[in-house]
Amino acid sequence: MNLSPFTIALIGVVGLLSVGFYGMLVSRNLIKLVVCLQLLAKAAILALVAAGQAAGKMNLGQSLALTVIVADTIVAVMGIALGVQIRRRTGTLDVRKLSSLRG
Amino acid sequence: MIPSFLIVVAVIFAIQAIRARGLIPSALWLAGVSALTAQVLYLYGAHMVAVIELSVGTGLVTVLFVLAINIAGDTPMEPGWIVPLPFAIGISLVFLLVLGYFVISGLPAPAAGAPAASVFSEVFWQGRGLDVLVQLVLIFSGVLGFLGLLAEAKAPLGGSLAESVISGRELEMKALEQQLQEGNEEQEGKGSLE
Picture: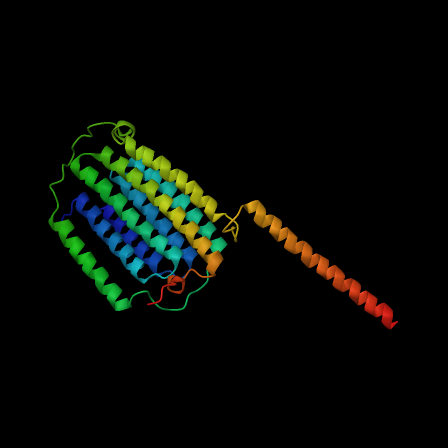
């Protein structure tokens, strides 16, 4: 079976997306949730570059991927900052214990 | 051949990042995923993005994670998941199969060897000007977020920071005065006994 580079990249994208999605479902630690978000963003970057290469518009794919990298980094910074402040105020990073809604 | 090997290793690293018990090993596995992704991007011809991903994704983000984990502490959690584990595994597998089927079956014919229509800088600065503006705003909010990471433990909820500092000093002074008074009273008591 001879797979094209585009197909290989998409298999990687699907793999990273699945792992990130699974991590989002099972992780209880706030910082680990940010790690899972980062995995999802890596998949998005890879997908954009692969799509750009396949469409013959590599520069467009690169510029979009660059925007995703910046947004992803800012999301990580904000998530980490929120996690640290929550830990300072409540003493835990466990999302189960942070839930204050009772129903 | 090389990208497929790198991608498989990146997915394995991603699984390890989820499975790792500690937060610092998890952050290091994530750095590995990022480095491998950067290498794959380079091999696909996206040199600019690969360099930025390597410096930002592998370097900056990992440093931020380690800093935050050192501030917040890496406390072990009781076993347990947000959703039942079989449900999470099942829904992830369904997600993998459905996404994989649609992605692989609906592939367009790749335009292999198509020449780049323009230069990267032209596309980025002229074609995607709005994106650059959005990135500037995002970077500004990221700086504010980092300041939030380094902020004091108990920020005042109402009033200015100066007021809260003054009220804290007043409380400390009152506590010191009380201690002094208690010390004087004890000395007077001892003197009267003698």
